[in-house]
Structures are given as structure tokens and as C-alpha cells.
Amino acid sequence: MNEKIKIGLLGVIAVALIANAYLLSTDNGPISDPTESKAVFERTGNSNTAVSGEADARRRAMEKANSVDPMKAKDVSKTSNMPATTISFAENSHDFGTINQDSENKKVFTFTNEGNEPLIIEKAKGSCGCTVPTYPKEPIPPGGTGEIEVVYKPGKQKNKQTKNVTITANTTPPKTVLTITANVLENAG
Image 1 (cartoon, one colour):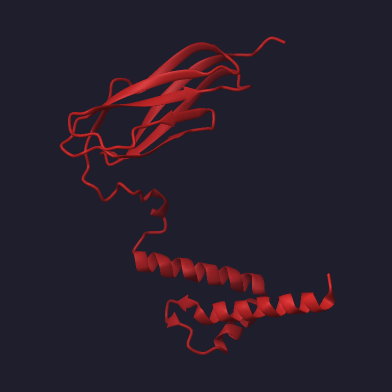
Image 2 (tube, helix red, strand yellow):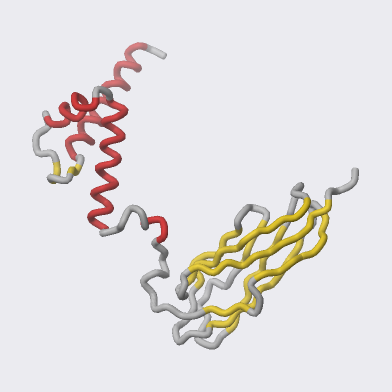
């Protein structure tokens, strides 16, 4: 690479780092003196730590602004602030019995909204890519029913298999787990 281009890129990176450090919010508020950005580098001894500290400070500022507990941030869902209802499944588990590798196996789980609020399913997620759920996107009214179809494709898995589908909704509790099991026979050949 041309030396002039390298020097130019390093200059752009340096300016960006200084600008970011200048705008960086700390627990005491924004840095008001541009020379303080130099102190970030001097305290850490290298720019990687400074960038890491900068990202950490941004994360803390966002958490403070949003009043989100960082330990619980991953558990916050879109439906957590909605009125809760109750979901009841006709069955929470299904055993496909003995199946073959590379087969497609479907199970429909039927549920009822037994609460007094509309049921909104935010997501349904399989424990691996071999287990794919399909769920209703529209609200289910109180007393209404719906279906979650689970397709299990074992691929080259073999022997006893247990897979889960986790449903996140405006329910109490917010997550419901459905389980499928199968004994997968290895294809001959």
C-alpha cells in the first residue's frame, strides 16, 4: 500500500479516536476539554484499551439513560410492558418415535388464550436450526385458540434427540417451552 495512503488513513483514524474521546460521556458528563482525550490514551497506555473504555462508557451511558439493568437487558422483550394473559397448550411435548435421518417431521401444538387480554406471541425459537416453529403473528383474543407448527428435520443427527421450542409472549410466565423427542435412525448406505 502506498505510504501516503497509509499515513492518511492513520491520520483519519487518529482524528476519529480523538473526536470520539472528546464526545465520550463519562459518569461526570461529557468531556469538556479536548486535551482530556489525550489523558484516556495516557492512562491506558494503548489505543485498544482506550477504544474499549470508550465503548464501555457508551454502554453505561445508554443503560443509565434507558434505566436498564445490564444483567437483565437480554431478558427485556417487546411484550414485557403489555398486559399479561395466560396460555394453555393441549400438550407441551411430543415424541415422534423412531424416524429416519434427513426426514421432515411436523407436529402442530394447539393452544388457548385463557386470560382476559389478547395474547401476542413475540417469537418462537427452536433450540437448533433443525427445529423450526411457525406461529400466529396476529393477536389471539381471550378464549381464542391458535396453533404452533414445529418442523423437525434431524439431518445427520442420530439416536435419541430432544429439542425445545421457546415461546415468548405477553404471558405469565413470559416464556413457555415445548419439547419434541425422537429416536433418529442412521441411514443405511
